[in-house]
Length: 435
Image 1 (cartoon, rainbow, N blue to C red):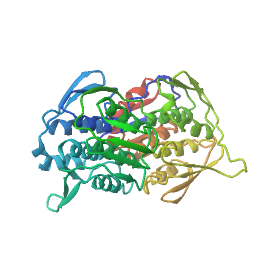
Image 2: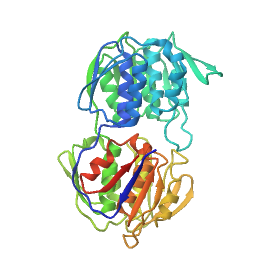
Image 3: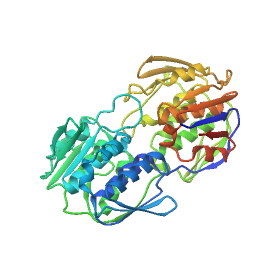
Image 4: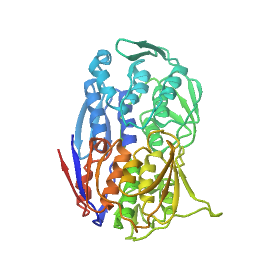
């Protein structure tokens, strides 16, 4: 296992480019299984989860070629269906949350799939009911193999249907879309997730020959087609990285420019950081954050405490709540962080409390942060990264802390952030990796 050694208290300065969006990359790479023709995908982030997914697709028989800097070509002309029954397939799926996104395209094109319990962050139960119920309504039949601990799924007669999703699940919506584009007849998905990454998936599928209406809304209408063809696609910048860098600049009191952020696809993210008192300026498609020694958390018009909560798009993505919680520890004022989706995602706050932060964990979903206004600096200490987003939040805390910090289990951070230590070192951070 690797660890970061961070010397805190150094200001950052310069320009940084966000990587390609991890969550979009997982979806569109799996979508290449829907055609036998080559698909070129650009701006693919070089992170552990994507590398593992590409390795899984190679094992499945997809011809994969790195054709340039962050550019890959996928050709799924010869899929090894027998590999889906191999225990190596099961083991790889168990280590990768994104493996669940192979379900929809395999059912859509090959009418068969195998699903093992996928891996990922330890942030509480992440149910797959929306995925399973959605494809079941399209005609998929599930058989549980207790010996292999997997579901074998048959979808020899996929038919369009009207679906009202019980939750606006991003990956659930993506899986249902990928199954429905080659089902017979019309599929209607109501309460569909409409995040930019789902929109990107839909736009890519339309270029491949799919018929999808309502892109960008929570009501999608899909007319099934017999086959799809190849295309080219460019992945959006990662909005979670953009938010992480905003928080990093604020916590370290640094001047930073985040380049090429695709501002129109950030939604409410800049506004929510502004409510924490962080000054920023849009410059074309860049975000400029000036050096700011103090930032004051806003309160509501009636004087009540600010409440920051996650919500389906266009609400705030839950992946940034950990960062916002850390940023609030050094603001002036108090804020309630309400993590509605995952019951274990706030459990990393005990580490921040040990660093000197004033946080009251009300329950598994809510924490009240009392800002220090930099009057009490966080202190460096030994930490461990429990998941991707808590990991980057702890890294931000360590960069602003007094003294040395050590973060272990940084493989979790590597799953979502490409060469984070190299890019931050270029801005003036003092951070090194030890294997």
